[in-house]
Length: 243
Image 1 (cartoon, rainbow, N blue to C red):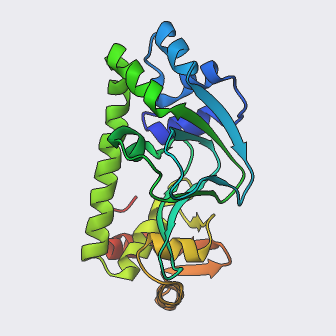
Image 2: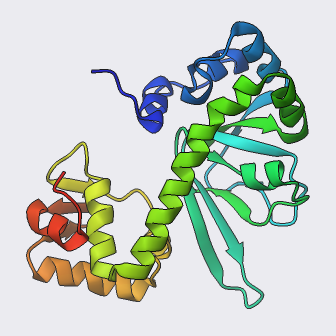
């Protein structure tokens, strides 16, 4: 059965990166149904950029000229408070779109920072020319609506988790979500500090929660590899159907 999930589709298509812009656009799940002339028009306002781990794509306050699609790697969106505290807002991987809100809403500056947490390749699409292109070719804009709808659904899930779930429930749900291709093992590719922020807690609480689940013999922690000893109990704790 073919993969219908956008992220799955993009991971398959970008196992090898470095395609010319036009070919890259055609391979992206978001634009796969566009006509050839529409792809050409979009390619004219797009470009591919590579970054090393630790590089910023843009900084908070910088003029918002483009939005981006991750082709490979991982991008962390974060803000720094006046007190110097870092707040991680989002983590994006292959196939994900980011920085579209300031571009489409008319906000003149990026409201946060964009950091590559591993070697990363992105497709940059110029915002103002893209809006003009959508006015002429509505199909291009319609192709992104489903992506934005999925983003809103994901946000509602995050809000629900933070409001209704305890930290151990959030962690159990996360571990199950990153172990889809390996039933008995979850591999965490991000720093524990980043994971704590994603789960809406602090590193110390996260460490205690890992220990709690290990003491309950639900998981076994081996550095960044988490062995899932009882998926059924984890699913019950997470409040989800067992994968």
